[in-house]
Structure formats: C-alpha cells, structure tokens
Length: 362
Ligand code: F6P
View (cartoon, rainbow, N blue to C red):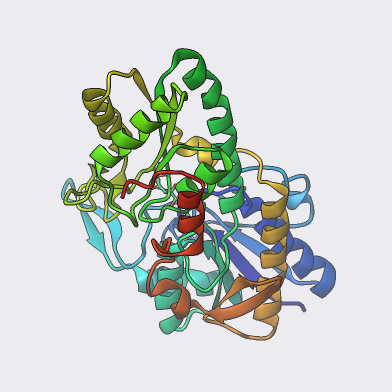
C-alpha cells in the first residue's frame, strides 16, 4: 500500500495555488502510487470535521490555468487562536490538539501546507507538536525570506503593470494625476517592480516613509519638462514620514489580522491641495490576486508541488521548498518565518528606480 498524504492551502488565495496542488497530486500518484487528500478551506478543514476529499488525477484535470484554489482557503483559521462563539461573543481559543487529532483521523502520513507567513508559522508550531509537515511558500506580496521569490508574485506584478499601462492613457488624455494603490502589506515589492515595469513617475513603499512635499515637487518638475500628467503607485502599507500606516481595520477588530487600505485617498487629497491638478484614485485590490497565473507562476508552482512530495519521501519534515537561483531547494520553515523579506531602501532595485528618475518620496 502506498502512502496517503494531505495538502491544504492557507491564507489569501493566490495565482499558482492550483499548479502546486496539481504538481503534488500528479507526482504523488503517477510517480509513487500514493493517495492525496485535499483538506478544505485551510486549517478550518482540520478544526471542523475533518473536512477533506480525495484528489485523484481527474480532480486536478484542467486546473493549471485556473486562479484561486480548488480546495478553498481561509485567512482567519489560526488553530492557536481560533475564533469560537461563546455566549454570543467571539473568543480566540487554542484548538491545536483538535487539529492534530483530526489529522490523525484522516489516516494521512504527512501534510503539505501551502501558504504565506501566517500559514507557515502555524505549520511550524504544529510541526513542533509532532505534525509531519512540509511547507510551500505562497504570496503575491513576496515578503517571505529564504526563497528568491514566492509563487503568485509574478502574476500580481503583471496585473499591476497592465493596469498602469491602461491608466497612462486616461492620465495623459485628461492631464491628471492617477494615484494607484496596490497590495503588498508591509512590503513594497509589488509597487516597486510594477512601478518600474509600468513606467510610474512616483512609487511610494512602506520601506521608505515619504514626504508629500517632495512628491508634489517631482510632479511639478515633470510638468515643467512638458509632461502634464503623472502616475503615482502607492503600496497599501506606505506611510508619510512621522505618520502611520492607513488601516481599514486594526488587528484586534479583525481576528488578529490587520487590514490595510486607504492610503491612496490621502496621497491624492494631499497632492490635490498642493498642486492645481485633477487627481483620481484607483485601488486595484483583489484583482491583483485573481485570475489565471502567469507562465512563470505555473512553472514555479508545479516545481514547488513536485519538490514538496520529494521532501515527504525523504522525510524532511519541518522544511519548506524554496527557489534559490535556478534551483528548487529545501530550507527549514523557521528560517522563512522569523522576519519579513522587505525591499532594501539602499538596494540596487531602489537605486535603479531613482536613477531612472522615479521619485520614491524621499
Ligand atoms: O497577503 C496577501 C494580501 O493580498 C495582501 O497584499 C493584502 O493586504 C491582504 O492579503 C488582503 O487580505 P484580504 O483578502 O483578507 O482582504
């Protein structure tokens, strides 16, 4: 009898998740004759139920170009702080023992957890409690350490770049300042790389607190040089020097997860005050996470899925697959989750942007 393994996808959905699932299922079944169970809705499926279904070859047919995840996900269900209703109130409880029990009841020998910082931290903690787990790094934010890049990021940068190309036509025709807010949480990768690719004039990222006067000055100088419009890309986590991030919901209001958003409105209002120019705000939001993955993410997701199965075969639990140069390797999960992979304000990417004449708000 072959092994039975399980896979779950946790955190926000991300282009390439289905490529990972397909890579796991195909290499487990075709190469090894194993059985794969898909746990539904992230760790929620291990708290409740357990809720899982077998993923055979038919289940993964045609899913490579599909966005989202065929097994569902959740960015709320941390088993160490799980929301439970008690006397009409929602409290956070540690249900990790229940998760371990439910996992054992599934009869699977190992778990592949595909997720970002939150999911991988939970996986490491469950690993410490004895769960044989292997991680796969996912996030459009690209903020995980120990891998050159996470899958999903390339697609998000592509979506934003296309949006910037399209917004140029309106900005130019109407002589407007278009302020485009992009995702990324505390990391400015999406803003910086798509801003360079999409020929932004100003890019504001969390790693470089901005000065609005400098931004207005840059737009004025552009106008003097004959460019009557500007494109400003602002990462959702960017903030003015001496100020704070703009939040829609604090962590305590949102089950432990801070929800960022709204900074573009402030930036646009401030630009409107200091320059007599029409401004418009575009918040790209979840469009950046949706839809079909780029070829790069389909390939990376497939490689990660295949490698994760190899790690289970080699019993390298507590490890995560990672891209290093041109190779897919494995690293201890704890190395990836200690701190975030942020843009280096003194790094080559930032200086390239500045040498191209892009204003980074400092
Ligand atoms: O981590 C991915 C991400 O899309 C962030 O860029 C963003 O801040 C957050 O998730 C949004 O989460 P939600 O889907 O809960 O709105």
